[in-house]
Length: 127
Image (cartoon, rainbow, N blue to C red):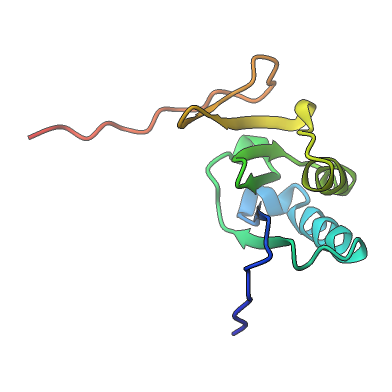
């Protein structure tokens, strides 16, 4: 297995490769992001990880950018490349595709989001 030196890494991109995302172009989105990063010679600055389910299946394909904590609905390879060029290079969030942003110690869904809110996680009873 490879052990990468991440000391120059500025962004970590989590690309959902769960079953729903894979059915909706997850492989193509993954490859588009990775190819764009390589083409722009940013491999040392941007690290990508394929994940399993990120829990937002209705928003497939889900791409999460850290350290900002921005969750995207990245349904096409073209949008995936726009995330690399716009967000990761220029620092501009691609507002039309945002599911959540991280603000004030929790995630917030933008008011204009077309994504569903989703179900609440069950509360554990205090005994």
